[in-house]
Image (cartoon, rainbow, N blue to C red):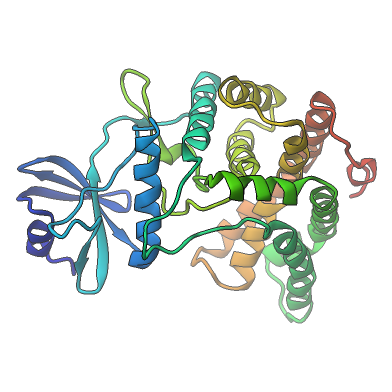
Length: 342
């Protein structure tokens, strides 16, 4: 139970109205409208996130949900062992990923964010979050997990609809995962990691529609940096692209619009395209959904799981067609044998 008076005391505010809203709390206070959010990680990680936002703001990227400090100059309130952050309440609408003009604005904003992230030294006592150098190992591990999950299905006496879809489709996704791994292994991935380490840059790591807010002047605000960490920027770009493209039937025009808009602000280097393609190819959505299902990570109904998996499998041909066109557009080597494997 959140104790409101503790929030008031620690942030030196008076709460006039409190309302739950999409996983956070809307507060009307004597000092203006605020967003109160419960944090599910520790103070050291929070200090890393706080420092990252302050670093962006200092470098001119000011449209974000900066934290207010408490009476002890810390970016959180501690209430019953729970951490809460307080930021300005931002009015606006979530970015529409079907609207190509809004997608272009979001892509350009991501480039500005990456540029402003350079040179970040995390605060003392913070915990450095980094995925640099991890992706070849992660891909390899996830490819192997496809067989482990298949074995779990094989041992079941009664197989669900999800099990049947998984068994029929897993070979294809395992194969395309291997090709993504080969592409990453044959790329300049580790050199790009070294550059990111040297530049001290970071990625948002959850750059999606509900974290990109457009106000009535079409100014863009980026929120929820909870997952930000040291990472090659190709990860953020590919993650953003996938979240857009799955909504528009893997339309190449949207991908080109994203690349062009990003490049207009901070050009992508030639060697980064191969890493970008490796990330785009890897069946992350298929793996994540299967992992959630077989290891009970999410409490969804059977029909929800089966429907989501079926949806991913049904876009397979459009996905492969996109990968081939994207490879040709940016002169990246593609493996024909994946395209012909079912």
